[in-house]
Image (cartoon, rainbow over all chains, first blue to last red):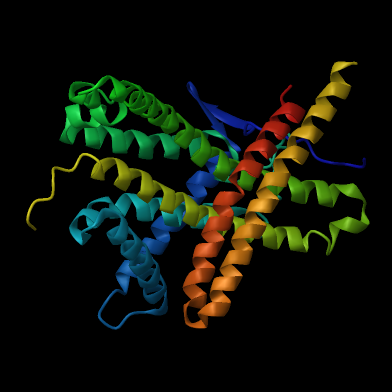
Length: 263
Length: 76
């Protein structure tokens, strides 16, 4: 095999500020945040009834996501409460998954030969951090709204009080077991949503690196389909992460809603 | 067998077996989506968007085995 570059799953360390280790995924994270802040400032400065083209593009995205959230949460008021979080996650990943397309970003190298930028989502910590935040948020909100009902959704003891005959005991035990299985499912949610994003982003970079390193002839036109595949999967994975966050938050907070009040 | 050989064998088998289920699932989703689009061409755009989301979800298990095989190759 000719020169296939060093592939490491953890992001490489570039510097250190006291006890905090800076690695190259963090640099790309800071870069993406700066781009988002500048974009927001530009749109807000010229915002008005007669929209500029950038504003129209963002309004399309806002309307899409808000529509899907209203469907999931039931009412637009509840959807607007969670809208800033979900939309930030969405446009952050829209931009961050395409970060390596910016020209010359890949060529900035530290004196040790480590490239200064790397996709933020290709360091396993970032998707886990986002996923932990969303899942813990949903549980904390549900717990603070109705603690007994929330725990009762997972440890189902209510049907044991309603047994009337000996035949219903196995069903009650099966319900209890399914509740425990739901609890395990929460951890499965965490691992699945973060590994999906990490796997797509990390593997996209690796495939391009390996194809470019095979022979000298495959460095020029051959990686193009794989780069296009990487772009598409970045867009789709940003959307899927946002949609699944909406689903998780709405399903847990709707399960502790009080019985239907007359709206 | 030496560790290096078993490592490579494990990584290859892991990804290979994981890809089968994902390919079957995605093909099924695509086929059903195409049939629905042929029956009702006006909804084609909405169906296409939802098909893409369903394909990304069906791909998840193949991505999990990809991550495990990468961890086997590069960490152990």
